[in-house]
Image (cartoon, rainbow, N blue to C red; front, top):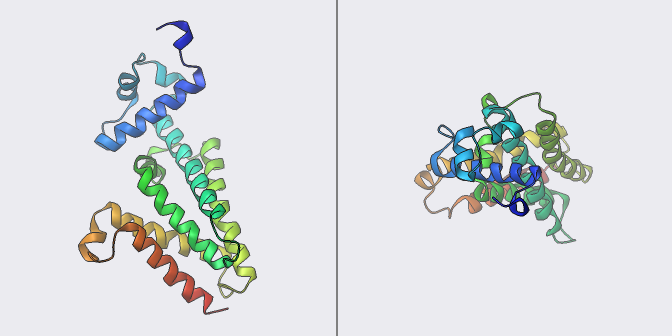
Length: 206
């Protein structure tokens, strides 16, 4: 390869991560490893090790990328919220952003929630998780200040909102959503329905 076309270390790292995403999308997590992505990218078998150390390091970097991407998706969803939207409606919009992320980045989504594959003490992963969770928590605190969900702690509300939308997404990923709710219209409709239902119930307490 000519020197001018040799990717930088940062570029190669991102290329390897994209190759891992594609391999997971095509084959699932099981067969994906360092040699797999090296072959896909066309580099030596040692190259991924220079960036990630081992397979667990690779998946940890993928999970961190996933949480950073999720944070961007939620910020993007938040920017599109009308100025006259209530704080509770803003919280619900983040749920839609979460669903869009799961649709567009299925490989990242599945790795993010497989702690047995990850380095739990990785600083990059911890920072990425905090970034995504912080967006949700900030919106919830703003909503609580208006009376929405005032009978519950911010922790309880964050857990309830996240697990509600995550549950709908998992039903969709498992193929269960269309089996039991064939007329619902898919995961986006499900995400809107559960967020609106939860939002209305908590708004009624205000």
